[in-house]
Image (cartoon, rainbow, N blue to C red):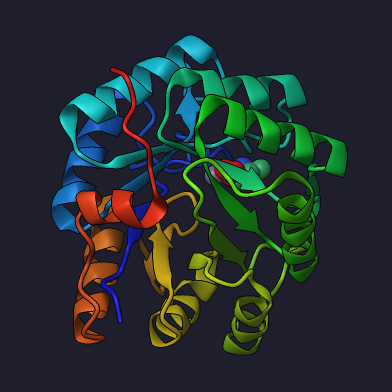
Length: 276
Ligand code: KMH
Ligand code: ZN
């Protein structure tokens, strides 16, 4: 059994800074968070960018500045979100691959997303996937529903392996409108993944702990962070992303699968060396 790859998703696009003051939104806040999360055991950071008013943006200059700043300050694998916010255009979501990241999220299907719809129609998915291959950006396949696993198979069948050659997935569970965050669903999703794929899982909101414990038991990796969870325990807001990483790292050590350092995560994910 290998160690545990811990991804931190510190910001997301859904929460407002006014409601969640601890959310890292500025470049300085992102870098400080990245360093603290690396020290706590994270190996990958999933980046969403905010503008000067802390609103979500896919502005390419800002994304590139964030990628550069986190890379300079840490050894973390830098993964940009190509999901953005539900209001972002397909063009902007593709353009973010030009920010020189190591990796990018790639969601394998449309999903109801609370009161909104997170749009990922097949023509967009296949164009984005081909772009990741051209740019040699390693995709992380985001799977919010079991149907997304079928689309992942379709993608690989039609267009071949991803940049680097290794398939890594993230099961995003417990979104209102997506697959539930429970162990039975986790087992069904994992059983359907392509042979040889590695996977992490994250449970949104109150599904965080059941999904984390189930994933550790099933040999998976973990994603945590304030994009997914704003409550540490009943009635106690998350104070900082690093405490979510610390908790995941503690549980991983308890499971005898200690946190994987970034260099090991790069090898697992087949992240190509990038020009500065
Ligand atoms: N913000 C969600 C609409 C991703 O980063 O790729 C999409 C999301 C997925 O967070
Ligand atoms: Zn995201």
